Length: 309
Image (cartoon, rainbow, N blue to C red; front, side, top):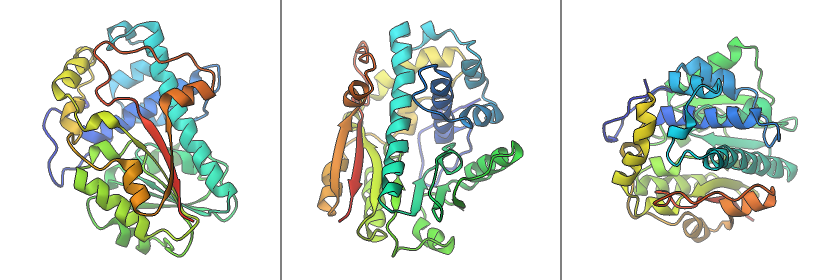
């Protein structure tokens, strides 16, 4: 069971069936469903087996089409399809981000809080590319072993770093072979809301210190985290808990005032482009996301790509 009823604490840890780790499994389940969509917006063949290996019953039923999606928050068919499409456009955005970076000659990538991300195994990395993945040791070990068990092989030189991002991850990254003199494509996908505000700033400070000209950053900004309504979010999760998924987002995120991602990166010298979810839907000619009754606690996500010149 993906229990997460208690509030976050300094130094807390998790695996892929608990706390923040269970949200990584939830995201991977979304990628698996989106991959099965006949429109072919994304192709992540490893999402399904990874989610099944974690073994959370709710997500296995989700993959098998056995959930009563009408019990989801605002579980209309249009809303459920929009949830799938949202994961597809998010995944495609960051897939395209890496493709653009390597197309511009970047041969070093770092995926922060990588969870069940399988890009090191499924993207067409150019020869000579090194992909580093950083996450909690249990998460790294589980994913690496599961993918090895099904015969999956990385499509780049793949180096894992098992460490919490609240610790001295730059030192561990360097020990794994990271070269700060090389332009790097960084990815912080679905991560920032799980970091305290000061840790978010520190993360971008650390990334900037390790990034020569030609480096890039891919991330997102959730405007609603500033005035996040924890009570509303908890109420919206109740139908999911009724079907066996005990993930309370209000207990996992760090709400309140924090730096605006785009503005902060610009202050650090990055050239930044933000693209709203609505724009991504329009670019792919997808139906608009139906408004959620009472609004979305995190607001409309803005996807961010930045580069240093």
